[in-house]
Image (cartoon, rainbow, N blue to C red):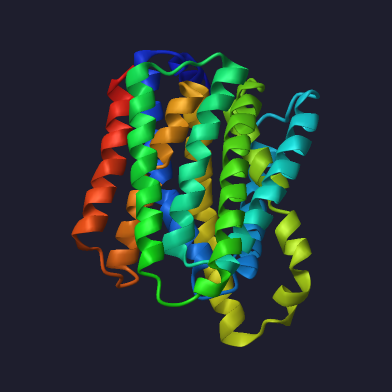
Length: 299
């Protein structure tokens, strides 16, 4: 399978595969955010998810995929540091702000800086039409955040710091998207990067939250453990899909298309959490989708 994926890199078929992977990552990332923001403390939820995917990835990293080349170890170290910063910023965001307000801000900040990063490090350049698509998509995302903020009934006193952390989280999203794209392109076998990334990345949060995790008992512990396993499976396909998309095709396009996750997050809020959608939200979600379509066809 690795040989087949390498043969797809830079081809029209690879572009189509990257498009499908980026959209799959969008759906799953919205679900991943809802899992972390759900009924448990977001710090504990993230720790359970990370610990689960480290345990699941361990046998694949150690016994299935080829071992990383020597030059990959510093790259994994850098990825570990960047993702730790991202997780801390994300947990602090979810700790302080309503999901439907802060999530669009995080996702709206990331793609713009990811596009700049792709141009700087990979020599990618968007056309004027694609920049128009980015502007349309971001106006829809930030419009959705503003609309949700105006209708927020509780938690307004912590919203200002929440939005600050949301912007910081978005910057980390852009940073890890660009860095991980470089990392997965730096090894011969993409599955080597994925298996070792999840294995290494999963250590920090469970160690950091060990006291709280060990103090949990009974039904609460079992519920968190289930959330951790489900979240781990979602993470494999969400983060794994976007990393693979950035290896197969252009980093900037994959980063922008993934941010249609805001649409799916709003749908989750409506269908699962029972939140009202209304005509304004539907129009803003259509704007986000239109921006993604413009980016795709404005090449």
